[in-house]
Amino acid sequence: MVEAAYIWYASIIIPVLVGLAALAARKPGKWAAYLSALTLAIPIYIIIYSWIQTSPRDPIIDSIAIDLTQYKIGKFMLLVDGLSLPIVIGISLVTTLVSLYSLKYMVTRIEEMRSEGENPPGLGTYYFLFNLFAVSMLGMALSTNLIEFYLFLEISLVASFLLIAYYGYGDRRKISLLYFIWTHVAGALFIAGVLYYGIKAGTFDVVRVSITGTIGYVAPAVQTIGQAAKIAAAAIIIGLLIKMAVFGVHMWLPYAHAEAPTPVSALLSPNLIGIAGYALARFGIALFPSIMESLQDYFILLALLTIVYGGLVALRQTDLKRFLAYSSVSQMGYLLLGIATLTTYGIGGAMLHYLTHAIGKAVLFMVAGVFITELHGLRDITKMGGLARKYPLIAAAALLGFMHLVGIPPTMGLWSELLITIGLVKAVPLTTMNNVILVTMALLIAYGVSAGYSFITMKRVFYGQLKKPDIPEEVPDGFKQTVIVMAVLGVVFFLIISLILIPLQSSSELLVRSALGMG
Image (cartoon, rainbow, N blue to C red; front, side, top):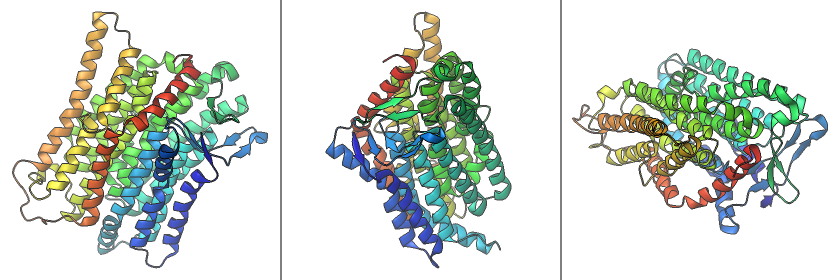
């Protein structure tokens, strides 16, 4: 165990202070972007230091805990173990680079809005809300208590709602309200289930830390509150599935993510919706293992349907950002599929796929933002083509982004999809030829659809005839550098994957063993 005072609290508080400074400043500029990036990267510094100093298996625990046990709430603690490690890395990495990317993009967007006769809040407000949004997602990943998780969830929803309402495209007020309603319906269901469980159980703790620093879980809800666990589980699980935007409750996502300012889309789509999958694994499996087992077949079917439906609808899109939004729906199916296997491999693969999707989709949204700012708002895929001739480095980065989603080396998607596949094979008994055929066909269709929408869109955007010959030759450094660094880091993580897989496997085994009594 790595234990130190204030390390995780600092990673949350310091970026907020930077955001407040930007909000108070008369003319925030590069310093706001650079300081935001520097402070949002604090979790990365901590994790690298722990890798150097200790075993990768060791959890990193903030020694400061807020003890609310006397109020039957439990303890608010902040920690990173193997299960949350890919989530924390994904959030910190994406928010750090997107904060730098945002500078040029948001200056252009604010000027564009003012030229249209609007009066949006300035750059200081943007960086305050951006940092608040970023640290709220980090807080959810670090939380060990259901109320603690919900508090950070509400902050993330309010901050992201304001970012869309202030700086979005199209009918941004209507779309931000749609986003607000859907996400708060999900939040209301989640907190209703949490309160029902916590009041009956006498605590809202899920993850517990012993005096020696050993990580453990509370007893499953069925053991503590009996049949009432079914009611709590229904509300919590449905709320999280809405937040994940799986098939049937996905309608809000394409509107909100397509019309949000692109740097915000780069956080919403890969980071925020994926946290619901993490919560389903961390809290859902720990508290409701028997219920998750009873729903396993339905979850697997829903996951496969989400992958295929999201991918096929993405193929029909002509707006690049709506395409990316629907592809996110498809990618959430992979997270749900891994979790639904209830195996060490599947759960670990799902958490790793969070990081895979975070990197790949952030690259692709940032590429879309380059076209919007540099090509006069270009989003229509039918008007693109041949752009690799003008922007070869951006095309290379986009290719790596798509490779992450498809699972082609040297990207992390290979590892995450491999683990999810192994988990599915272990979860579905392949004792009959029918089962072998069904699993094989399901995986071939799912992976085939992902490859199809990825590389068909890559071809439509970057290859073929150049449809806009009069475009700028150079991409501004602020865009080019951040996009390329994000894409390259995805390859770096592919090469050092053992540093993530070792603690991830250990924590996944602990979760499965604690909840389901299996290794």
